Length: 356
Image (tube, rainbow, N blue to C red; front, side):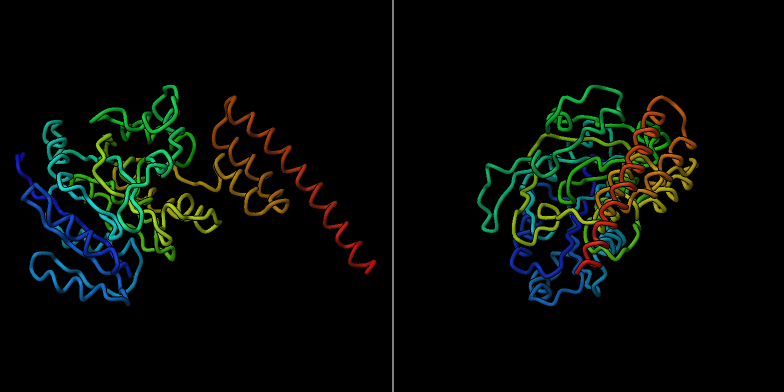
């Protein structure tokens, strides 16, 4: 194991010319010297490419047509050589000592040659780079409660449950696979892209990730696959400045059916493929899992009645125990209730239209 490994910082950019130079400078100004900076421009139509050109051979430019964040991650990793991979969105900023501290954590815990992903904590800044005290790590990603089921411990709440010290093992791939085998889906365990560092051996198992019609949230594929194929670690060190602005895709995301599908439904085939490649049985099918109950009710309303009734049978036929039996009766009741209410409101609407 090398004591001074090369670290690849992969910056993905699309039309963020007003932030791009600051992101690149934060990568170039690292206190750790063995760094390569790969800047992937995803078909920007603003001044981004002129900014990239100004850096000359200090960076590795990857200029491509627009294909979304996943395609940028794929091309960036393909161009990289580092033993540790750090992702950076072009609207965010690395602390000068980030890479040095990440390398130290990997090295001191003998993780450089292991399949590992490490999430660091963050500080929130506004468009001008001023700190926003009201935004904490817990605000950006407030729900790690599913970890209690994965780890079999008690959920204590808040960011300290995830960031438990300078170096903390969050979960193992065996724990995550056991959860997936039971529930047919897994939660997002981690933080946004600019807080991700991973070993090359793990990244090689993850990339390439699928290119979808949803141009952001590619880190969902990365984080979920990483938790299945490697160990998840966290550090409470604030090593990234996470920028809050009007076009921030993660912080300003609105709950839509498409977004929920991008996070839970679309990754199924990819995650099953990764399981099979690692010699494990494919288990993912979110739309036939207990987690799908909320999805159907949110986006189909009373029209979800038939979906819910079918779902209750899918779940109990997959696994029969007290938990699924309770879910079966509860979901059947909701489905029947929705069917009755749906019939009532549709009949009332029909009568209203007929009367007019």
